[in-house]
Length: 426
Image (cartoon, rainbow, N blue to C red; front, top):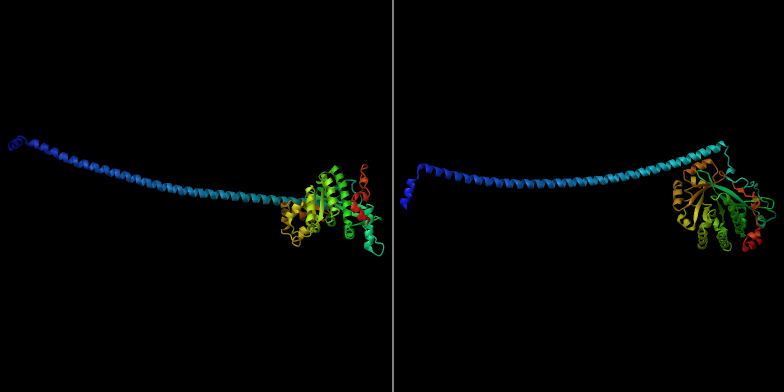
């Protein structure tokens, strides 16, 4: 074996040995170079993953920042929407305030123009142009009645009784106009008694005598009969004109007459749109449960109710609405300067809105000059009544009022129910 090895060694030349050494060295270098390549690839892979991780973090941060920006934008959008809503509401409030102020200014201007017009015409207080030509008679001169004998009240009672028996109960009408247009909308029917010598007896004179004697129901019955006749005539010409018919507190509490009154109006309920029954504040506030039920029954028939002689404004308006009251008459002086003394819960400027919420119309009564009208227009008063718009004027008998076909007024005894006729006879 050694001999073979030696032979081989001797057989390999030096050049061959050099070639083998070169190959070995090249192999070693290749090995180390491949190792470096693997290291470089590993480093490249690590760098790749590090970059991906960095990119992922950056993306998460960007997404978080974008979400925060979106939240800020949403908050800003909500704030902007709220600001827009607030702006719209304020614009609506300003528009409404401007409209109200403009309307009030127009009303005031209209009132001032009408006042100037009236002043130019010489402060004319009589509005004969608002009434039907030939319908009103001449207003009789008022005079204090004579009381013969030693007992003036007994004499006055006898004059009243005779006037009622002989049907000397005159009907007077006073216009109620809309504001600011001053268009005729209603009349108020007022009763006056007439003595045998033609002297006019005012309600303030006869009520205090007639009421204790139980005769106010007789007066109201005759007034009601006249109102029905007049309303039927008025509706032939002006169906949009109504009549306020006064019913005394004594009649409201008259257990004998008032049920008959309700039955009478039940048969004339076709006039519910034209007749408004008016009661004093004192009688309404003092009404018992049965009397309030009678008022509701009257309202259920379709007749509207009105309250006058109002001195207190701390009222239960919701209750008045339930009873059927749709009109409230208040003195002009009370609205202008007496709201606090009357116990009103609101100022005059807001009183109309309070009534409106309860379906009640406001009528200012005793309006006597143009200055008062201008002040009332600032309170949005619906209607006005007073000598400025027309004084109460007497109505001639139906048979004499340019209507030859109209039936004459029947005797009092035939108009009154049996119970009232006995009461009148004493």
